[in-house]
Image (cartoon, rainbow, N blue to C red):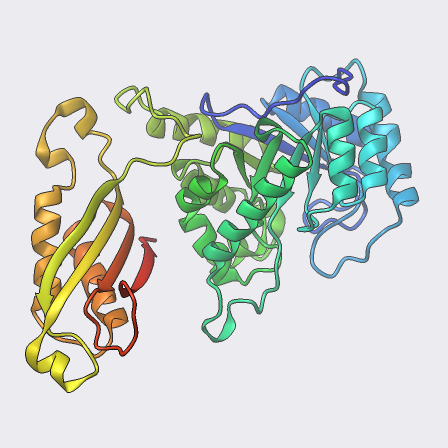
Length: 409
């Protein structure tokens, strides 16, 4: 293992899916607690994961499984430092330290770690200071309350997007480069199992929300895999894990965190051969916003409104529409059948606006969105801004409107 501190650590993007192997040097981890608690077994397992193809070894000395009691930084470091020191000169790949404690993080970096895997869900300026001081890599995990999505509150993907935006802004404000930051949507951290499934299904949305930063997905042997597969024993969930991570890779995950490195490397290589195929557009830049189909100021006469005169006399509405669609084939083929035709979209929007009337423009906008998603399966994301320039309101204003944003899951 090399001494990485003092150098800029950058998370690679786009070349392949990177595999992070888990090394728990604890006695109470949910899957392999106690198996690698001794120094000899920990070192042997790290070397075995390197031989199996791991790109990074993630060492944790404090279990973060639900219900596990926290340990002091002193106890955490007493478990961690002997392993780090024993691995110096034996590993040719970077080491990550899985910790929420800035003191442990700094000690880990000083003893050869290149990355801090911080699952606290807290944007801690002290931790950021450690990352900046040593130019280390920083994995930032989105946590949150498992009850946050109850009663129609903020959906989980929206919470993740907002956290990613806050984390990116925070890292920038702390002088940490985007290349040194990796964002993790936090499977199993403060989320219900249905939310965990939504996150995996929505990996592409998470990747877009991460912008020009790497995305890590870690579902290895977790409860969401156990409940989905019906497998109660965590040690028998590797096949289910591979399925979950394959979905994540197809959605754009840059790295997966796993217990079974050998199987995960084989699965990642196979998934990469499919989703990173030669016929994809070589100029796609994941760090840039996705390509859009844009329609502006589409005027439609319709009969939506609460007031009787609106239903009787009608009025002009104006729509702005942004569409993110699976249209990469069109850049190569130059065939209209390989993209979503904006002319066809306009006709569908006009039909959706005029085929029936609604009291609320919120419902009208949703009706248009439903129709577009149903007719065009290649649409992935949709934004509709529906405006009423002539709304019957006794006030001096330019327009009123409603904006909705929808994602296909």
